[in-house]
Image (tube, rainbow, N blue to C red):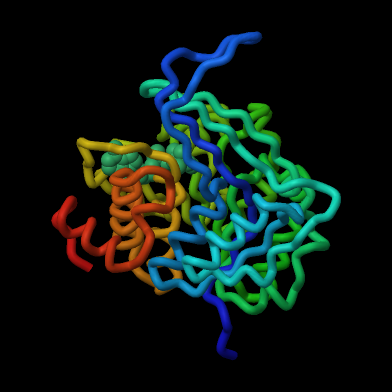
Amino acid sequence: MDKIHDVVVIGELNVDLILNQIDQFPEVGKEVLAGNMNLTLGSSSAIFASNLSTLGVRTTFIGKVGNDNFGDLVIASLKSRGVDTGNILLNDDHQTGATIVLNFGEDRAMVTHPGAMEHLRLEDVQETVLTSARHLHLSSVFLQAGLTRQLVPLFQKAKSLGLTTSIDPQWDPAERWDIDLKALLPHVDVFLPNTAELMALTKTSNLEHGIESLKRYANILVVKGGREGAWAWRKGELVHQPAFLNEQVVDSIGAGDSFDAGFISKYIQGKSLQECLEFGALSGAINTTRPGGTTAFENLDLVKSIAESTFNYTF
Ligand SMILES: Nc1ncnc2c1ncn2[C@@H]1O[C@H](COP(=O)(O)OP(=O)(O)OP(=O)(O)O)[C@@H](O)[C@H]1O
Ligand SMILES: [Mg+2]
């Protein structure tokens, strides 16, 4: 049967309030000024969905926002990039989450109020929405307290309904890394941590040992290594893709999510691991040429022109 969507994304939704040009890091009891600020769509899952849609993939989203202005902003931003927002739930009891980002030189400090996104549960994921798509992607496992314990039944269900699946775990702010990968990974077709997350999840100290310890359970393992590019492992095959180096990085907010979007856009077309990795790395690199996670992906023409002018790559 023909599906209405290619990919259903389940994940967290929030806004980012980014404060730039702060001349001194704030101290308790004092006030400092920021020379510039930007209120924009935040959250790994939303950046992934937004950029995936720009790449031409029909994308729908299951998530929770509050019935408030930040929720309106999240929904309007996703809609403007063509993401189907009809499955986003409004929650009257909790506010839409927000991250306040203090950019200070090369470094940044962040404070997040998760709000409504913590309250998405397995019961909120309707079977009819799952079956409307060919592929399920979930991001930020540890920011979604309502779902963390129910990941195995969720992914089991998606697989039994015939979907292919992927997860980007993202960082665990509590650094407990408490998920049962042995039970979960057999139901995940593509697992996409970065190097630090892989090592923390597997309690290993390098990439090789991290991959080794997941080999028995994982299907495809994709590890993102920033400027070192990325690796993909599938039974008997390990492929490395160098980064498309950008020497003038504006910022790397969302580079990993854009990488995921590029990789998954090719994966669902049945392309080879090398092709998926290459397009993932290109998408991650394109992300670093503009501020924030979605500005380089405003539309497909812009993405193509950055690929050509900055990375000498035509698609
Ligand atoms: N400076 C850079 N130049 C070119 N490409 C880059 C650069 N930084 C990142 N990338 C590309 O983007 C990909 C993803 O970035 P990274 O490895 O930082 O993911 P991540 O840690 O998951 O990111 P995020 O913080 O967004 O979750 C990299 O594997 C690489 O291909
Ligand atoms: Mg990441």
